[in-house]
Length: 445
Image (cartoon, rainbow, N blue to C red):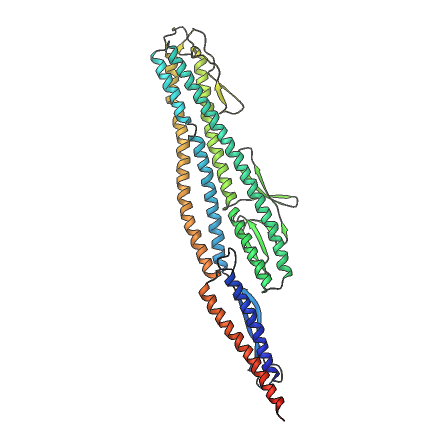
């Protein structure tokens, strides 16, 4: 009789826990980061001395199991890191394109040389000299504004890089706290399942900032490497090696992990930080090309000016002056009469020096170089946007595959709820039958 009561009581306890878990699943339908749980039950075998040892003595709930698929989880993090890198890279390519086109630099340089061509037809015209001077000033302003736009891009890159690094370090600190909690929590418990959900959410957020290699120990504590499974150690269970962001002298970006007294270089293949590294590299390359064009144009135009005579027959002076950066250009004089259109001794109606300027324009191809910088960047941006679209579809597919395993399905949970309710009722009925039987026996006189 006591065995019958034990069987009923074990069923009530086990199926009550199962109903609680099913209720949590239903309550968290659609909740981000929640992983469906199920209960693991085993039969209680007959004890020593039992008449029939093949018979069971009830049911025991041995743990709460999280639905999971390691490969699907890895696919989500990997595809998310790839998408974040491409999206971040596309953002900075778009900024570079706007910097190169927003001030109409190439067209203003063209207008300057076209104004020189117009002046060559009538070198003594004050109006045409003023037009050329204004066009030169407009080109100088465009160079300066474009350089300032690149300065702003670099500043924004550094801000985004430092913010992403700070966020990644903060996530690592939170992960260590969760690891400590998992170390203190009994495995296969409700608390352990909740901590594991939080752990996975943090790892997913980390993967959008950098590609991470993750390993879990028997208790579910995570160790993380930056740059993939063969990368640099970042989180080692209860220890964080801080990530640092730096800007190199060549304009590129450096990432490093500080491990004690060692500073280890980090090479990322995915995540927002990898896109920032790509953006800094592309910005530095475009700026270098822009600086080269600006320096070459100013040097050769000024050299041509010095080789000629202005409207008054005086030896020409430099047309442009340059600040601390090659693109910080401004006019060196404010009178069109100082434009050295003529060669020495040939009079103010001579335009030989302007002809030399046009030859320099053709030989140097400054306008073509500026257009090429813009075209190369636009092509890279177009390719990057195509990649982003493809990677978005890949990530959505990976998320869908993971959700099909870990998500809560209301139809399935409704079936489980009915099953456990019936089992609970049956176990309660067993207790009732045992009590009634015992009472009947006691009533025999």
